[in-house]
Length: 453
Image 1 (tube, rainbow, N blue to C red):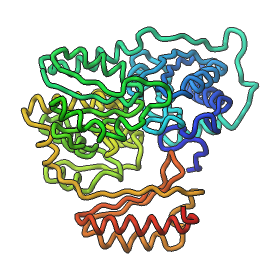
Image 2 (image 1 turned 180 degrees about the vertical axis):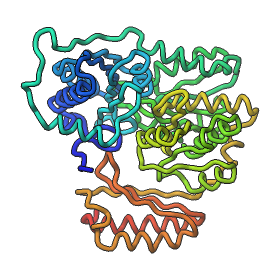
Image 3 (image 1 turned 30 degrees about the horizontal axis):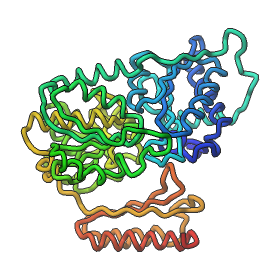
Image 4 (image 1 turned 180 degrees about the horizontal axis):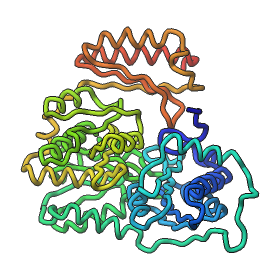
């Protein structure tokens, strides 16, 4: 398969207003995506939905992508600031041909991105993105429609209504729950939607934090990347749990009633066991990425649950769900996909599922989390000038193998980020000292190869 030039592991993502996220390029992306969907159904007027997160550049890029869609003859429904899972839901509910999310998810506010959903609310695969790239670089302006064939735009009224109503109905059993919660919205796209959903559970006492977006504070010392800032609030307000979303709402990191962070792997494990116990875990298996902890795999195997590993990225999890007929997938970073509810990562859905499990089991989140013993896992990021194939860096593969052999059944994973100019070095195993040493040695080797950075 050819190498992608503008798409990464989660759509297009880089610094906003820098190629390929300039307005000029965003117009071309809008055109290319529309033309790709037109090829699938040439007789139909293409309908698209577009939503954004709260970062300062989102309006600029949304306008540009929308202009490209209309220039190619597609109609646009602008959802304004909404979460990524809501766009996925809106596309399905309103029979759109595709959806676009302008967001860089958990990245800092200077970055932005373009994510694409098909009519099923699922992200595109590598082959489809390559086909869109071919149209992006084609630059054939003779294809532009004119007159009545040019697309139109409209602003959606109350775009969250169907999504909120459906999610509340799914978790109707929580209507009498009188628990106390802390919720961190990362100054992102979930603030309005989370408040509406949780307001439907009127007996719950909710404490919301980081809900005042100003364009530059999204994810800043808050949200799924910084759950430690939510932790003391859980204890202060005597809550049973805290939920931290990321900027676009497709991730969840949880904090237990003791103020301890419960990462994505433990959440995957808790939900997998619950679904399995209730006969709702298809194939007695869940999909996770190569980053999920080996301790999780060992624990779930003892519960009769197997794991399917994929490349990093929630769209690869969706591909595996569809390929194997699974019902659950997740990343340790906090993406949780419960297929029967939403076909993409959804932080709010994941948090409500945790509340449902706590309610039905009568147990504390700390107890459920402590049942799953994870290996110490340490990661390092090394900035790189260029992404030289790992196997072409002299001595690196041999070094990785030699240190992995010392990890007593643990493992190492060295890979390039799909969204940043960095190499990620991860090791895990029962001995934390050996894990740290393995990460340090490999990271130092890469820094030396990369000129000491």
